Amino acid sequence: MDDNTKWIIVGIIVAVIIIGIIISNKISDLKKKIVEKDLQAAHQEGAIRESDLLNERKLSDKDLEIEKMIASAKEIANNIAQKQFADWKEKELETHRKVIFDVAVERAQAMLAEWKISTEKGFRQDAVTRSMGVNFGKITEHLVPFSEHLQTFDPRDVRFIGSPVDLMIFDGATQKKSTIDIYFVEIKTGTGQLSKKQKTIRDAIEGHRVHWKPIIVPAFKWDVADEDEENGEEPFPEL
Image 1 (cartoon, one colour):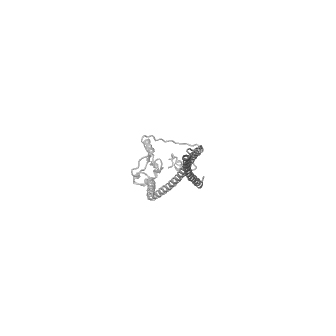
Image 2: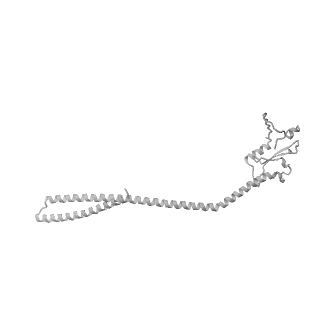
Image 3: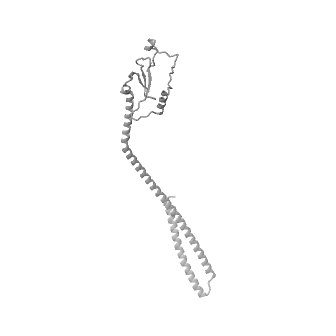
C-alpha cells in the first residue's frame, strides 16, 4: 500500500467519524424533541404510550452502535497514524545514519591522507638510511681483506663466503706453506652482535669440532690437470 492510498483511507475514516458525530448530535436532538413531546403528551394524556417507549429504546440502541462505530474508527485511525509515524521515523533515522557514516568515512580518508603526507618523508629517509647501511656493510666485507685489520694476512688467502660467516682465511695457502692456518671471520660494524647460528659456529671451532671430510667421485675427472698435479704434489682445494 503506497502513501497516497494510506492517506486516502485516513481521510475516509476521519470523514466517517465526523459524519457519525453529526448523526449522533442529530439523533440526540431528535430524541430530546421526542422525549419532550412525549412528556407533553403524557402530561396532556396522563400516560406514555408503549410505542413511544419502544422507539426511545431503539434510539438508545442506535446511539450505542454509533458510539461503537466512532470508537472503532478512532482506533483504526490511531493505528494507521502510529504506523505512518513509525515508518517516517525509521526512514529519517536511516537517512541520518547514512549521512553520519559518509561524513565519518570522508574524515577518516582525509586524516589518512594527512598522515601519509606527514610520514612519507620519514619513511623514505629511513629506507635510504637502511639501504646505505646494508650497502656499506657489503662494501666493507669485500674491502676488509685489504684493510689494516687483516694486514697480517695475504689478501689472496682471504675468501668471501657471506653466510653463515663473512670470510674464511687460508693463511699460507697462496705461498704454499707446508702448514697453514684456517680462520673463520665475521665482520660486525658498530655494536653488531653475533647471531645464534654464528655463536654455535664459534663454539664448534673453539671446541675443536672441526673436521676434514674428502668426497671422492670415481666417475669424475678433471679435463685439465692442475699445476700441483703436474709437479707431483698433492693438489690444494681450489679457493
